[in-house]
Image 1 (spheres, helix red, strand yellow):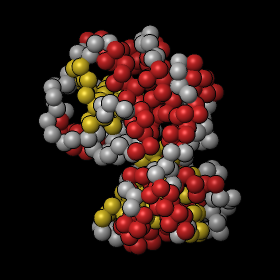
Image 2 (cartoon, one colour):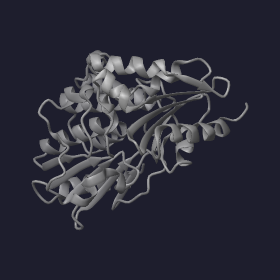
Image 3 (cartoon, rainbow, N blue to C red):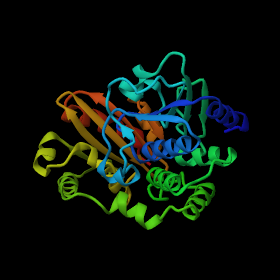
Image 4 (cartoon, helix red, strand yellow):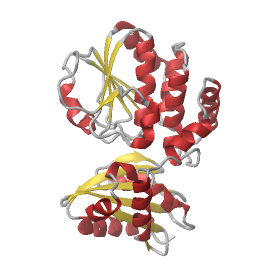
Length: 325
C-alpha cells in the first residue's frame, strides 16, 4: 500500500460530496465493520452517505448498527453517488444487485486485502499485508488525520477480530495488534465486542450448531474436516442460514486438521462453501480451483448442484490438495 494510493483515496473524499459504500454479498464481520466505520467517518465530515448490500445483517453484528444504517433493499438509491467505496470485495460482480446501482460517472474506490482482487476500481488500494480491510481503513484514517470516534473504533475493532479469528489466524501481525490497541484507547471495549460476536447467540443458532457438528466427518487421515447445513437442519432448529457464520472455524480446533469445510445448501441446486485452513494449507488456493477466493486461512466459493454432489466433488479435490505429507 503506497502513500500515493492513500492520497488518491483521501483526495476523492475531499473532492466528492455524495458517497455509496458497499461490499460483497452476504457481508461478514470485516465488511460490515469496515462499512460502518467508513460511514461514520464520512458523515462526520459532512458528506452524504448510503450503505447498500445484498444479503442480510447477521444478528450478532446488530450492536454495530443500532440505527439501521446498513440497507439491504434493492430499490433505487436516495441520490446518485459521485463516489463509490467497494470494500473487501474481489470483483464488482460480487456486490450483487448493488453493481447495477452504480452510475457510470461515479469514481470507484476499491479497497481490499485479498490477493486475488481483480482491480476493477478507478483507485485500487489492495493491501495484502493487512489482516482485514478494517486495518487498512485505520491506516487511511491515520494518514488523513480523521478522528477515530468511539463508533468508528468499535466497528474497526470488530472488523479486525472477525477476520483474524480473534487474533488466532496467521494474518495477525504486530501492526494489527498495535492498531487494535489504539482502537481500544479510542473507546473499543474488547470484552463487549467479543461477547457480542461470539457469546451472544440465539438459542436457534446453538441448536443449528449442535445439529451441524453432530454431522462432522473426517477424511484424509483426519486432515480434512467437513460439515453441512441442509434445509432440514434450518427447519428443525428454526435458525437462519446467515447465523451459521463462524461454524466452520470450530473445525480447526480438532487436532491434526489442515482444512475445515462448511457446505451450506442455499437451494436444491446451489451450495455455498466456506473454507478455513491451517498447518501450511492455503484456503485461497483451494477456493481458486472452484473460481472462488479469499486469503490464506479463510476463503469461499459457490457451486451449482445438489448438496451431496457438491460435497463429493469438493472433498475429492481436497484429498488431492492436502496431499500425503
